[in-house]
Length: 125
Image (cartoon, rainbow, N blue to C red; front, side):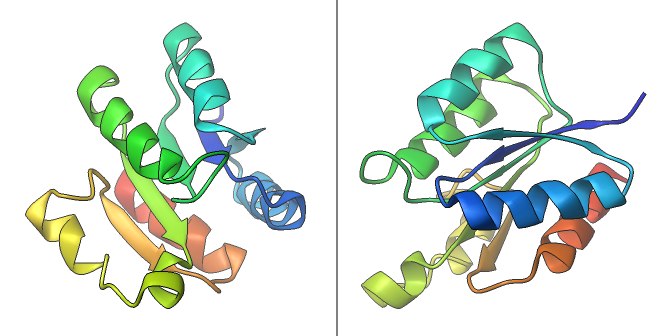
């Protein structure tokens, strides 16, 4: 059985690229547009990994989702993929190692789907 990947992304085109790339890698992606939808799904069946944008349906909801996953879905890695650095001028990548970001990896947009899949696979191995 393929490992389930929850993709939480409100940009339909990018979510589609990620879905296709994860399927091509033999994984089972499920796409959610909101943090709330992803949380509801995780409560029913835990994924192997969560890939999320930081800015979703409300300000910072991707950050809220990553924290929720770390507190409620033990052992599920989180990859945050976002362009928030460009919008805010802040360095969010450095917050991964400090634990502030509640994510296991951080990738800056624009980033191609193959790079996201490779990062996710490295966390799953």
